[in-house]
Structure formats: C-alpha cells, structure tokens
Length: 198
Image 1: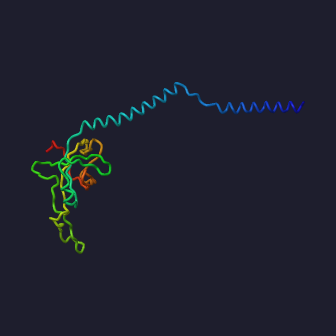
Image 2: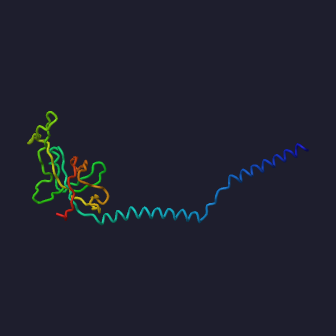
Image 3: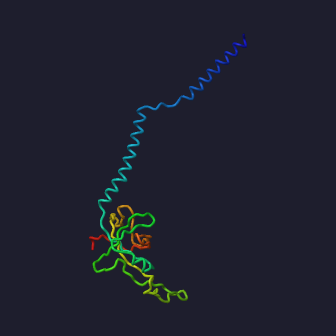
C-alpha cells in the first residue's frame, strides 16, 4: 500500500512539474490591437519621411532643370571615331547607361560635331622638354584631339555646381567613358554653362 501511495504521489508531482513547465512555456506577451496600431503608425511615419526626402526633392530638382552646354575634349582618339559622331547622337555613361545628353554644336558657324586638332606628343631629352611632335595626319585612323559640345539638362545648385538631371554631379576636369550607338570614347569636361547665359 505504501508503495502504491508513493507512486501515486510521484505521479502527481510529475504532473504538477509538467504543468509548471507548460505554464512557463506559454507565458508570451499578448499581441493586441493597440500594438498593431502602434506598429502601423511607425511604418507610416517611416514611409512619410522617405517620401518627403526622396520624391519631393527629385520633383523640386526636376522643376529647376535648365538646358546647359557641356564642352569637352577627347584625347588621342582616331578620326574613325570622330567621323562616326553626328549631331543629335545620344551620349550615355558607359558605366551606368545613364543618358548624359545629345551631341550638338554651340554655334551655327561650327560645321562639324567634333572640331579636330592634330594630336601631339611631347618628346623629352635629358629630362627636359625637347619638342612637340604631331602624330601623322592624313592617314585613315590618324590620332587627333577633338573638342565638342553636349547639350543636357542640369539643375544649378546654390554654390554654382551642376547636377545632371538634378542628381549626378558634374564639374570641369572630370573624365568619363561615354558611348553612342556606334562608338565608345573618353571625354574630359572643360566647361559647363547655361545656354541662356551666352
């Protein structure tokens, strides 16, 4: 009898222990309607902040876009490259595919898109400049320096800097690899000016 009562007592203790464990496992904080409303409010506020600083800034910058001329030079390109460039060719950044603008001429007096100048190389002798030698001209793929103009839309910041389409910073001295549908070449920006300022 004693053994039976002991085993029953142990069984009861085991049940009590399992109940206690079960109760400990199910003690999670309750998720109520108020919690859902608070989380929803936080998401709406975050979305509102993002919307304010991205969409409206882009909208404002696009309103202030002005037509500009980017004057550029190309170093040591071939005449085959410059002959493949025509007025109104769309120019893209090779790295991103973003449109830079269209090739144009800044004056009706200019007949060709790229003004060609013979490319030269400086020869040094004894560590001093000796002579400037022109690359051979008149050949099918002569090396030349080219000067051209790209028409684009930029926002002009208060400090006088230019933002292509209101977002990409442009400045004289920067070099880019650009392409058209026919050719790829490097340009160095020499000047940026609003078209209406001339």
